[in-house]
Image (cartoon, rainbow, N blue to C red; front, top):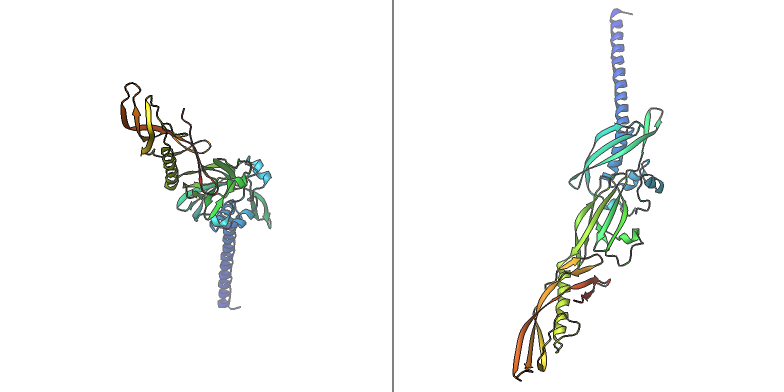
Length: 348
């Protein structure tokens, strides 16, 4: 072999050797990237979070150890009867900017992975416990949640019977049927995905609640109250009925109208029929009690026109007097057909 040919051969060998080294390095780097992305505890947790961000609840719950069962809930000391009604794709918030902030390994080999994200513009985070379950080809480890990442939201609806999340209306009595049919406040436990706080509200003709967020942390119970309060329409409807009740009282031509909050006693002789009217109607202000709506003490002014004859000297005198009175409503109930049932308290 000529000297030039030998040099060319050596150069070719060196070039191909370098290419081989680069290829091996690329394969190893790719292998490491794949291992970190798909076969690491952080990659496993990120895959779960990405499924939530994609609103793919079925994929998220299909991951090993993710779907809570009665036994896993009991082991985590969570209510085994928690409803699955809120494990829905169509009610999840917009989740973005997902990142792992830490990954620590415990003495038992379980990894604690903290993931943060932004849900509907607000920062959220969740802590996942991940353990190795095996390996693919003896080199790529496989993982599972050591405890289910799904938490429990204990949702209470005060002064109403339902709450709304997205376009979905939820009745806590369906999840917890033992509650009395006429309960003024209802509550139930729901399984909720982490990193995905749900906006709850209530809006109806007579009561409305300011939206609140219900969130859940893996292995924990979080409590949220949807607090429904009277709408102006509710107060106006009750005011109208109170005014009508007092007007009917004023139609009674007696000194003490039956079942009414006003009346007088006159020692002299009454000539003709007394006449009542209402000068000032009480101002209705509804407030929530333990079992229903009610009012505090309300004041008003009735007006009496009557002619009396003195028993002392027989003189006849017309009277036209304002008569202040007080009243309250002990119960205001919204019937199923939307009408109101109002009970006037009996004043001592």
